[in-house]
Image (cartoon, rainbow, N blue to C red; front, side, top):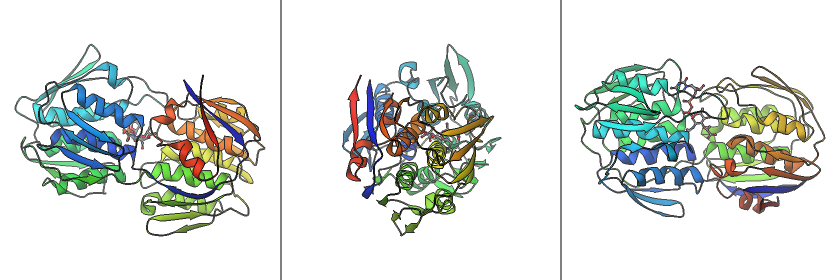
Length: 420
Ligand code: EPZ
């Protein structure tokens, strides 16, 4: 198993190019199940989750080529509609094949994703919406078995809760359904918006893109022609490097970034006194004279993202005063707290609210990554900690951060990948 050895403290200076967004790429890859042509996708991040989904499509009979950040995926000749446990258990986002497979073939089986470190993460809302579209769904032997022999029918879906992959699944299901589907309380995340945009460019009528009410007119099982497209930049990777620069009091410029996707994150950094220079596709961060404490509540987009909670928690350990961070999306997404405490952070956890007293002098120690974003928070803390930190279980990090140690290397932080 790989781990990182980080010898802090370090100063950061230079430029980082932001990669394509993992969470945009995953639904876009699943969307190729709706295409009649081989689909070319560029700016894919080179991360494990992308390879996992490609492997899943391959297991269904799809073919693909993957060269660096560009893939061509051909799902014309699928031989199977069963997404098996061995792959789904390694990545929850595999559930994204449910909507497209069902709407195209009228039947499919997808393994239930099972438990997860950050919370329960049920898929009841995906299933309920598909049932409203006419699917007959049963759970048998750990699998979701879905049938709609005549195809899915448009419906008015009102999500009880905003769900990102749930919205993506229903958008894809609706694209080949018969008639009009309206999704109320849809996720507004840029990743969902890109999925809708690509579908619209492929001839599916989609209205309300980027809003909480989406209207999709399905093609009644006619496969669509999808032109080549490029994945949007990863706002969470960008936010992670912004926090890295801020915690290290460095001067770092992000390139290939979409600042309009990061408004809540940039707002909180500004509140903390971090000087930012924002241009069309670049953001420069400069050292804060005084890093101020902040109060954060995670919520759905466009509010502050849960995927940036851990990184800000690390940053708050260096702020002059008391910060609070309330996690509203996932009940168990604070596993990094005890690891940050091992480095010397003063954090008290009560329910879903973490109170961070800063600034704390951090010292290197052995710590364990518990999920993807928690891992990056540990890297940020290790950068300012005095001495050597070993971050174990970085396979979590490899799921979603492209070439992390190389990118940090370019801005002056030596992060060594070793095996244990
Ligand atoms: C997506 O997960 C992201 N994953 C997550 O990113 C992200 O943290 C999350 O959205 C929230 O922004 C991908 O895009 C692949 P949800 P998703 O359905 O879609 C509850 C990362 O680090 N819910 O929006 O699975 C759920 O339990 C990851 O890159 C139900 O109750 O999240 C949660 O409390 C981790 N029933 C809330 O809704 C359902 O059927 C939001 O979850 C579905 C969700």
